[in-house]
Structure formats: C-alpha cells, structure tokens
Amino acid sequence: MFLTISAFGVPERPATDLGYLLHKHPERVQRFSTAHGTAHVFYPQATSEQCTAALLLEVDPVALVRRGKGKGRGGAPDTSLAQYVNDRPYAGSSLLAVALSSVFSSALNGQCKARPELPAQSLFLRIEIPALPARGGGEALVRRLFGPLGWSRVEATAIAWDAEFPAWGDSHYVALVLEGELTLADALRQLYVLLPVLDDAKHYWVAPDEVDKLLRAGEGWLPGHPEHRLITSRYLARRRSLTQQAMDRLELARLAEADGVAAAEIDNAVDESVDSEESPLPLAVQRREAILAALRNAGAQRVLDLGCGQGQLVQEMLKDASFREVVGVDVSMRALSLAARRLRLDRLGEQQAQRVQLVQGSLAYRDRRLSGYDAAVLSEVIEHLDLPRLPALEYSVFGAARPRTVLVTTPNVEYNVRWEGLPAGQVRHGDHRFEWNRAEFGRWAQGVASTYGYTVRFSAVGPEDPDVGPPTQMAEFTRADSSPTSHPNQRKETAA
Ligand code: SAH
Image (cartoon, rainbow, N blue to C red):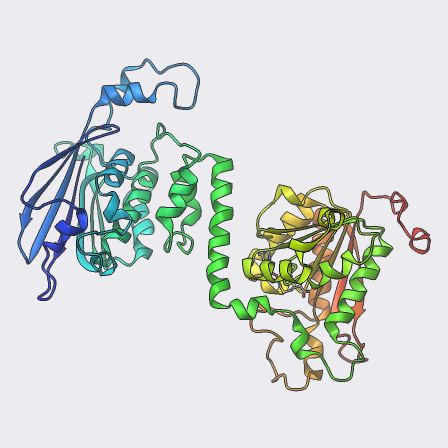
C-alpha cells in the first residue's frame, strides 16, 4: 500500500516545511512497525519547490489474520485461504489509514513542536494513492466523498481488472489524485476517515471508542458533509447502534455550531420581545398558563418540556406539586446552563432535586430517555426546525417516546399583521424557519395525529382577533389508545 503527499513551495514558504509538519526528516528513510506490518517513510523528492513524502505500508497478512482472531464479529474462525490471500497488502485501505494515524500522529493532530505556527497554514498539496478500493460506488463515490471538502482537483480513475483483457471491465479500485490548498492536518484527518469508508472492508474491527475517533477526526468537516450518514455508517462498519450514536453526536455538533453562531437568537427565542401592548399579560406568560392548565386537565404528573429553552415553564411546573417529575430537554447547552441557573439546580433540596432534570438532546433523533412520560410539551419549538427535519421530530416524539398527551404551540402567522413594529412578511423571530396559519397548523397536526394514533384538538392562546385569530395556536394531542379516566389525577370535568 502506497501513498504520497506532495507540498509545493511558494517564495516565503519552502515545500520542505512538509518535513517539519510530518516530523520526518527528508533525508532519511525511516521504518516504523505498526499494528499490521511495517511502514516506511521516505522522500522521493525534497526541494524548496516540491517536497514529496511517501508512505509505504508492507502488510503482514499472517499477522493480520492472527490479530483478527477473537476480535472480529465472533463466530467460527475463518479458515479459508481468502484470509491469507487477499488485497490487503496491495490496496490502500483502512490499514493505510491506521498507519497514517500512527506514523503521522502529530501532523494529524495539527501539532508541530519545532514550528508551532506551521500546522495552521494551508499548503498547496497533492495526495496520490495509486490503488485504492472504492467499493460500491467507484469513481463517483470518491468524488462524492472528497468533492465537498475544499479540494480543487479530485480525480479518481478506475483501474481495469487486467489491462490485457479489457472485456473484464474495471475493478472497484481507483487511482486517486487530490490537489488543493488545505492544511496538512485537515487533509490527513479526511484521509483517516475516508480511506476506511471507501474500503468498506468487512473485517475492519470496530471498537467502541471508534465513535470518538470518528468525531475527533471529523471535527470541522464531517457534521456539515452532505454524505455524513454514509460516511458514518461505513466507517463504523455499518453497526447500527454505533452509527446512531455517532449521528446523534454529529447532529449535536452541527446544532452547537449553529447555536454558537446564532446563540443569542436561539437562546432568547422566547417571543417575549414581540409581546403586544394590548394584552394584559405578556403572551409568553399566557402561553405558560394555557399549557399548565392543559397539563393539569390531562392529569399529567411526569412531564417532558421538549425544547425547554431557559426553563421558564419548568420553573412554573416545579411550583405545582402535582407535577411529580419534570424533565427539560434542549439541544442548546447555553440554554440549559441558563435554565440550571434560573432553577438554582445546585441549591435545590433533595426532594425538589429529585423532581427535576435537564438533559441535552436533539429532538430530531429518537431518544430512549424520553420514553414513559405522561405528557410532552413542545412550546414554540417546531418552528425552529427546518421543515425537512420536522418528520424526524414527529417520529421521535409521537412515534418513539409516545406520551399520552402532547401539547404543541406555535405562532399563528395570520396574527402577524397585528404586531406593531413587525414589518410585513417578516417572521416573529430570526430563528423561525417557518410560521403557519391556522389551516396549515391544522393540517400538520391532523396528519401527525392520524399517522401516530392520536386525537387532536385545537385552542387559542392570547387575545383572539375575529379576522386573524389568536397570536399563538395550540394543539393538544391525546394518544388514541389511552383511556381518559385511567389517571387518578384526572380532573372530573374532562372525564365526561
Ligand atoms: N419552550 C421554550 C423555548 C422555545 S425556543 C419557550 O416556549 O419559551 C426553541 C427552543 O428549542 C430553543 O431553546 C432551541 O434550542 C430548542 N431547539 C431547537 N431545535 C431543537 C432540537 N432539534 N432539539 C432540541 N431542542 C431544539
């Protein structure tokens, strides 16, 4: 297995800086013993214009088989010849990625003791791997994976099975050339993840800490990569639970990034700023009162506040002993830490502390921690999700967590014309991805109810205008298989 990394010099930056970055002297040939064989590093060329480092990995197929024993997927040991005679020694693959990370670990981590300023600088790089397995997608897959990562040239050329027998067609191997201006650390971290992804080898051993490794190496480029699902799944050898774990954490990273950018916006997404003058109570207060009344009415004792923001509703619920347990969930760490401060979580007595919990999580993913509650509240949350992500939230709340009652509030866009100071056509909050009129909300809620086996009724929050309706609309979903009298706390008037 063979890979070359070339750097091209510019007047103020000689190409031989590559030697510092790789921590390998250009004039020496060095050998390293790695988990799967011996790695050799040498420089076919080292001038100030072009410096090329080569990594040659000699895989020991016998060691490979021995190391694999007992570590793989279980089952009977593979005694076939294929475990000794295979492409591992020749094709760039997951083993090359492992060698890269052990031989060039400082470079991969962006560290350079001798020249600390170097790792952050981008270089003109060319990376060549003459034989790289690209299973299930070939050249096109290579382009899909490397295309979005800042390279100016991504060239994958299919390699024929045998040049003398063109009729045999192309193999699933490609010759890869990447060129572009990137930092070496970014380039290496991409290779570290994407080589095994392309390889998709069945006997790539996946340890539990592989999720951590993936996320570390993927920092800065994986969360936003259009193929992040495919990359994650293949990197983790298609193990479902690990993939799901990684996807959840990627989603958090993505949202945390967005959160950082729009932190103020998201944290303060409560619409108190646009409360109307005419209403006797701020709309946010009226909303909380309507929610609390609906929860009490439904006899809910253990309640989830999904997208709890800074925890105002959680705080109100804690004042009422009929709510035995309250869990606030939000994707924003910042919002949660503000909520913890508001609730004085660190100073609560033991009894109170047992009633409340704040957890970070994304509603776009199924979360087992959310099962088994009486009710869930989504107060002014759905409009913060991109419409294409909404079905994922619907599934995780109505399909997976399935509380008996779900309360959803969202702005009624028709009312916006009544807001003073809200320019026509504008949404109430910078982070709102959409705002619905009553008919749109009604259609959505009916659809969700029928898909997941709930009934739904609607109510108004805030002063109701004869033409445009109320400022906030609320839907109350009740799981169709739940008996209305099955809860002791249930108030008499709704049991009728
Ligand atoms: N429920 C509060 C806050 C609404 S603001 C209230 O009524 O005042 C919307 C909140 O949803 C924000 O705190 C935001 O961080 C959170 N949020 C947005 N997308 C989310 C997601 N996918 N998972 C969990 N929380 C999310």
